[in-house]
Length: 49
Image (cartoon, rainbow, N blue to C red):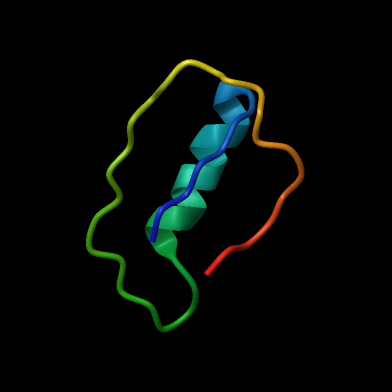
């Protein structure tokens, strides 16, 4: 899975904590993080797949 998110550092850290836990009954093996400069072009939330 790949996720792109923008926000303040506190909110992003909380989001990372949730990603590391995953949904119930999931086993998350690894979460790789690349901190990049804010682009400001993500727009509203959406799911593609």
